[in-house]
Every structure is written in structure tokens, then in C-alpha cells.
Length: 376
Image 1 (cartoon, rainbow, N blue to C red):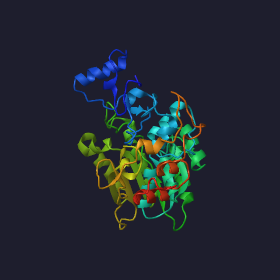
Image 2: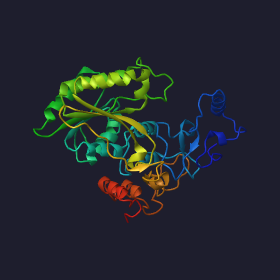
Image 3: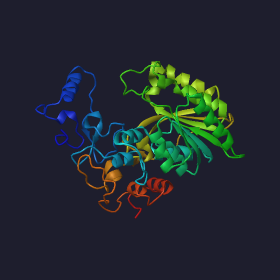
């Protein structure tokens, strides 16, 4: 199947002579007009950013995850690079857990730019932290981590290994966990230093990828626990991240309810949709970002200025798959390759960033000045 798909192609290029019940289902749903399924069994183009990395990137039939010029799906390290995790970042747990951590993460480079756009530095509490994409981005920007919380202990093992050792495993719906986090927040406050809360509840219930999107899904009520935490702790601000499906649930009523809930405890609320391909990240991924400030007189949050573009000739071109992973070793299907040597020296600023040769501030300076290939 994989061999039959050309670069930029998808399931439509796989011959019907290859037996597959899943392909039969895709073809039948396509005939019924139930969507193009254009990313299923998709092969990436090396001259474009990747599609959204989901938690099933190790399965060719669940998205556009086939390597652009090798007959296999992308590896975990390649998927992590599309998410902007550096090669030094160590994911802990079994294969399924690592794929989930990578696919669900906030791209650290996106979080870094959000942190820089806040025009201040402080400390942060990371709720629904996962592996720590949001936390890593804020740490890169000079912020100080206080504590992370997630319901999955393995995800927190990754967080503790790479970002900060103080973690609390368990759901904030548990009164003991909630009170423990509140206590840590209160103890960590330093005079004159802003304290912020980061995090977005699990997004599967809001996602347009789900077959059923409803407020009956218990995951869609976790934002009330987030709001309750904000009310109790009274931080200087918060950053909330979720999928764009949140915007149109029940004709926009759900997003209005979420925004009103935040406004009831944090006076100044701003929201925006951010596309990662516009921020020098080699992936097409759209997310809703809500930023709240406790100081109602503070200026409204303005999203960071875009740097790259998929379409505009006036802007710098989006970072491509080749720029992201072109230096990584050739692999056999299912091979990890983390211990294999690089194919060659870095040939893009992004590869240099992922290998720890430059830092995010230098990377964005190079992008802004058109020097994405001139760092050597």
C-alpha cells in the first residue's frame, strides 16, 4: 500500500487489487459523498509542511503520515520534529504512550512565541500538561516552571525528565489533587513575579475529527475545573489551548459559554486562532488560544506576528518537511533510529535548532531576516 502512494498522493493511488477492508470502507464512504478522506494513506510532500500530527501517526490509514521518499510511516522522532520537540527531548513510556504524547502536544515553538508575546516573564503552573509542549515553550522563553499536572503518570515522567521535576499525577476533578495543586500555587507565589496558569483540557470531545461532538462528553466539562482553579488561585493570567472545533460546537454557543466562564473570574479575555505553519513550524495545525489577564487595565493580548506562509509570495515560505527532517537517517519500517547518526550536517536553521546548535531566539531571528539556510 505504502509503495503505491506517490509523494503528495493518498488512498486513491492504491490499486483495488490490494485487499483491504479499510480501503473498501473508505471507497464506499467516498462514493456516498461523505468527504474526500484526502489525507488517508497520504504521503507527505518534502517541499511543504506536514499535515497535523495526530496520535495515530504510526498508522498509514489514519492520516497523512507516510514518509516523503521512504516506504514507511514517519518515526516518532520525525513526528516530534514536526511538533518542534528537539532531538534531545526524551519521551518515556511504551510506543502507544509516546505516540499519544507527541500527537496531543502543543508545539513548543508555538508556546514559545505565545510566551514572548505576553511581554513579561514569570512562573507558571502547567495543567493538563501531557509531555510538556506548552511548558517547554514557556521555559525556552525564560519563564519558571512551578508544577505540572496530568492524569497520565507516564506523561508526567516525560515532563519531569525534560522540563521540571515537580509533578502531580491525577485528575483535578479529584478534590485532593485539586487542593494539592492550589496549595502548591499559593506557596510558590513570589512578590513582584507574575504567576500564570497554562493548559487546555483534553480536546477529543471538541475535535471535528470525532464522530460525536456534544456537551454530554464529560471531557468537555473539564474546563469548569480549570475555571474553578483560576478562581481559587487568582493568577495574574492564563493561557488556554484547544482545537478549532470548539468554535462551532452548537453554532458557537459552546465557545461563548467557555469565554463567559473565563470572564467571570478573569476580567480581560482575548482569543485567536493560530496556524503553526505561519510561525515557522513545519506543520499545518490550527489551534484556538484564549489568553486572560487578571488586570483589567492591561492591554489586550495580541497574537505574535506571523512569520511564514503557505500561500503568500510576499511572505517567507512555510518551513517544509525536507527542512525539518532531511538530515535524519534512513530507516526500515518500524525502526526507531534515535541512535543512528545524522545523514549530514544541518542544512536548514530548523535542523540546527532541533539538534541544539542554535536556540529559539536565534532561529526566529534567522527566519525574520530571510537567513534560514545561512546559519552555518
